[in-house]
Structures are given as C-alpha cells and as structure tokens.
Image (cartoon, rainbow, N blue to C red; front, side):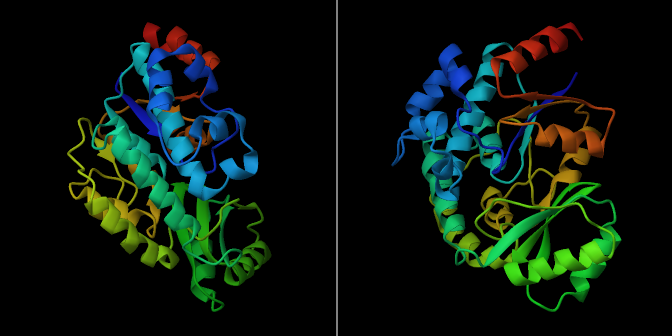
Length: 305
C-alpha cells in the first residue's frame, strides 16, 4: 500500500466540521487551539452561523484548520501519508501537512487569500458552474462560440466533470447553449466569484507579495500541484498562478497513480474528491474521513490489508 492524503477545497465546508476530532484527539484539539486569527474560528466552524462560514473570507481558514485537525487524528492512529495533494484551497492544507508551511504561517496567508478572492470582483457579476458531462469537445466548442464575455474552464475535475468560471451574463449564455446541445446536467456553484479564471489575475498578483513574505520551504513529502498536476519547485509561482489558473485535478491523480500511489484518503467534509478519484481510475482504493465513524472504518480495513 502506498498512501496519499487528498485535502478538500472550498464548497465542502459545513457547520460542525472537525468537532468530533477536536473532542477526541489531543493533536486535533491542539491544532484548533493554536489557530488564532482575527475572529473566533472554533465558534464559526463548530456553531456557525452558516452564512458566515460560507463567506469566502472566513471559509478558507476554517477549512484549513479542520482538514489539518482531521489529518492529525489519522496520524495519531498510526497512518501517515507518503504524498499529498489538495483541490484549490486544499493545496494549502497539503503544503502545511507536508511542512512547507507552518500553521502560524498558513493561517494569515490563507486568511488573506480568502479576503482577496472574496473582494476580487464586484458581488453578483461573476460565478462558477459545474458541468457533468464527458463531452469535452462540445464544451470547448461552446466556449469558443461565446462572444458575451469571459468564460473559461476552471477545473478539470474528472473525465466527466468540468467547472466553468466567468462573467455572469456570459456564463448564463454558455449554460443555455450547452443545454440546447444536450448537456443538461449543470450545477451553479455557491461561490462569490469566478475563481480559477483570468478574472482573478490582479488578485493573484496581490497574493504573490504575501507569498514572498512567507518562508516557504521544500515539502517533507511530495506535493502535487493544481496548476500542473505535478510536483513544483517554485512554490510561490505555483500558488500565485493557482487562483487565476485552471485546476488540473485529473492530471494530479493520474500522476500520483503513475508514481505508485494506490490508496487515497480524502481529508475533510463530504465525499466529493473520492467520487472524482473513482471517475479518474476505478481501480484505486479511496476513503473519505471527516468523522470518528470514518476513522474507525479505515482502522478496520486498511490495517488488515
């Protein structure tokens, strides 16, 4: 068995996440207790309100700490990832787990990232939509035909799931055209802007100055990055480009499998990443961990393989 952790991104959050590991694991409690920022992180994470937790400016730090606490609980049980990756925001959890960043460095950095992304574009002018279809050629053709404004593929999540990101009017036009062409499974995402698109270029440049002020070091274990699906040596450049560049999740998982990783644990609320991994390669073993029950399941199965 060659084990990798996959850290969830924004959109996976839910009120109460991380509370079980906080109550039951010393290392998880220490991570939450050490996570000091300019708001009551434990209260928002454990109690909400939901509308505050879902605000990008708060979501990202809360998810970072929750995911690291869950990973710490797994480590406390004797598991240890040999490589990591994270979807979008999850990349910061992955880098912190891999010791390229300390928690005290990651907290203000991710807080700033969330604020920059939340304020990058005027409210209600841009958005993102998931397209559940394997007809990539048809999606690309439709984007090429679009004359209304900027709409781009933000995520290559699986061979049958892509995410579009762009200006709202143009995005809605593209959605209507896709429906006319027979692609009807479209899911508008609850986000505050067109993340992972060229519309966030200015925000990415602002983030770069903050990244340069942080002492990023080489990860202790391999980290596979969103921008390429591969390991990167220039961490500042990879993270700068990330918020205005498409997420290459398919390439990420394919490269990890090619490098021998056959068992993946999704870290964080939900099962979205597990589903994507199975769509990319149905033969690999994938677990999702967010609760005590899910940790017990892994203890009962993985330790006997």
